[in-house]
Amino acid sequence: MMLPDSWIAAVHFARTRWCLDFRDRARLEAWQQVRLQRFIREVLPRAPYYRRRPAKALADIPLMDKATMMAEFEDRNTCGIRLDKALDIGLEAERTRDFRPLLGDFTVGLSSGTSGNRGVFLVSRGERLHWAGVLLARALPQHLLGRLFLPWVPALRVAFFMRANSNLYATLSSRRIDFTFHDLMLGVEPAVPKLNRSQPDVLVGPPSLLRALAAEIRAGRLDIAPSHVLSVADVLEDSDRAAIHAAFHVPTHQLYQATEGFLGYTCERGTLHLNESCVHIEPDWLDAGRSRFHPIVTDFSRDTQLIVRYRLNDVLRLATEPCACGRAELAIEAIEGRADEVLYLPARGTGQAVLIYPDLIRRTMLLAGPEVREFDLVQDGMFLTLGLLTEGERSAAVSRVAAEFDALWRTLGVCPPTMIFTDWHMPPPGGKRRRVRRKSAPEGLTCMP
Ligand SMILES: [Zn+2]
Image (cartoon, rainbow, N blue to C red; front, side):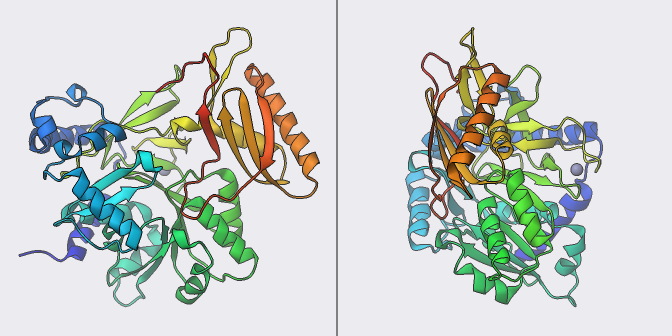
């Protein structure tokens, strides 16, 4: 007999929320080891790539990334699904915006990214229900739980903005969850009357979209009062947080979710924790002081498309203090974006590469004053092109920005690059917002991969 989807998801929900609530780091790690050992023994050999490379421990297994995953797609999944078959379904769904078709029993989706850098994800029914249960267990605050389980209160209304829908997200829809997908590609305007009608309890979307909705509130066109706001898909910056809070009067929580898995969530204290009861994350340290790392992800709860020692480009900054909530899962100060969001400039004197993380750039822009409404920055060698959207007198804002950057270069002891100021342009709807991007490093400087 096949159990109904909602029952299975509910079991995963309860187990994650109440059984996998680790408060002791040693217990969490011991539990991870048990799961990893079982995964290495029973699941890995089901994919040809790993069958040819028997391993006893995680450290024996080669690293992977998006390029290797895509190049050896068929070899690295346990069902022999070919990349071209999966891509056909994914691309067709993107074109028609009908995200329901399955490949056999599997949900297929494309991850965002530029066309040369596309990723495909593949999940079975079981994985889909597990994901839904875990996600709800980690994302829903206490005050909304009754809406899920008490039949006499109205169902939970969730408004969800994403670049693409998926059967994965549709799994969240049930008798207790009134789930509405809004297509990010259509922009904010068509969503406003729908939101006014549906009055969502939970609002989920990328920070740029949440900000656009906050602006609609200020303009008096949007009149909703969600009690829980979740930011997904992009880095949430402090300025986003402030603008969203001013409109909705609730803190913005974060879901750190990617093709590679559901990697993190914010707790009731607002701290981002790695979702270590579901995925194993090894830090690939970027600095001697061990504060920043690329996560290497092993998702021991998936058994179709295998994510094993998958090195992500994201840069995570560890929190300096453990979180007061008491969770044993690692606390993260910030997700600093991808490796190409880190700028490189030569140190004065030695010429050695100095890494400039995007939070430093954002802080500098913040110091330049409230007249700077939006910005984006591209490094091309020793040239930095800075697109600015300003309020009031532009030349005054530009000279304040220039002065703040001069101060930053002095503090860091780097050779100052040539700054080029241009106008800021709105990213296309559905496009990823990249505030800071390194197109190329100055000649002679070596970049990390
Ligand atoms: Zn916490």
